[in-house]
Length: 255
Image (tube, rainbow, N blue to C red; front, side, top):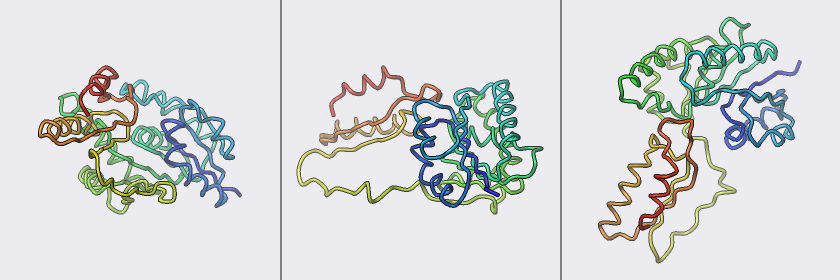
């Protein structure tokens, strides 16, 4: 019997950018690969790989309990129909939705990929601290479930999950998503000219963008000819997204 693997991912482009090599390897190993995700512009490409695509609204920017309950119910119905052997939840929102959805279903193996603990774990407001406390209690129960392994990408996230009570034997550290060194080869250091720095990613305060801009301003004020390239887009569904207007104002600054 063919084994069935389901990826639960926030966006189809995120699956395509970050999970495609692993999904291809799983298919080559004999898995029937299903992708459950919000669909934008990668549907045809995902289907062309031989994967089964299930459009699914994860409501990534919502913190509403009503939305969460509705999403979990929809995920539960889909998983009950698909009956996978393995569920791979990618990022925090799918982790919560998928892990809640499988409760009470016939036992299946779950892998969670935590690429970062997210904005909720960095919030300092009263509301943010209350939400974080609730998330920590939920994580303790969900990640200690039998037949569950959670992959983290840095020692800090592993330590944070250990502090909330996740058992160490259910946490695996894989440092980073990796870089294709055949496609991305470092160039020699330039002999002359200004020093150029680059940031590549979503335009989020949580990723340290304001600190980076402050450092750039300090170096320029000191007389260093530092140039800074910001490559990426805002993420309106994230509460710490930098507005397009502020990004445009930064782009008018020297360097």
